[in-house]
Length: 263
Ligand SMILES: [Zn+2]
Image (cartoon, rainbow, N blue to C red; front, side):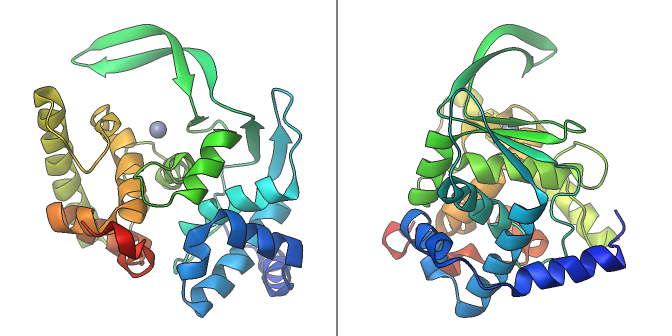
């Protein structure tokens, strides 16, 4: 998507706005990662949050009354994925729908080997290519922000899907900088995906959540959760995967991960 001149100016103005002190307090209260970022990254994140909140439409669903605190807590996690990179702020995404808690939806899903399963599925979040919307359960989004080291984060997961869609296809491969990076990404991700499927089938414990074995799209979302939530463990046990994610995200979450959760 084109970065229009007027949009750029508007975004510059939004990024330069001082953050509402109540929002700042909400960040500190709900998102411990924020306090561990460098001052430069905190400033960059705050700028992104202001653009994000100005451009995205939030809607409370299932009786949820949305507050600024909820919006800021969700935006902060979504914008963590944007740090250090040129970004158009999830251009395909218009609306974020927030439910009070997990919800059940009828779905048809591929469980592998050409087998499809139909039935109710418990969901904490959802988004899809060309949907324009992203759905979150507030209790899960809040828990993900408060516990940045359990390896699970529904906001990072769903927004990783949005990054995947930015290069016009949903395939577990976001827009990368160079041809060499695409080649390396494809090689590393397919090997890691295969390894996770094997480990899942054998019931072996893994750093990556077993849900990542569903397909390459879910693999990228699950790997993103592990990259930000369990960077040391991921780097130790899956160094090639960590390296590709580090090149894409242009971040090293080891620097701001919880010092008490060393691998
Ligand atoms: Zn997913």
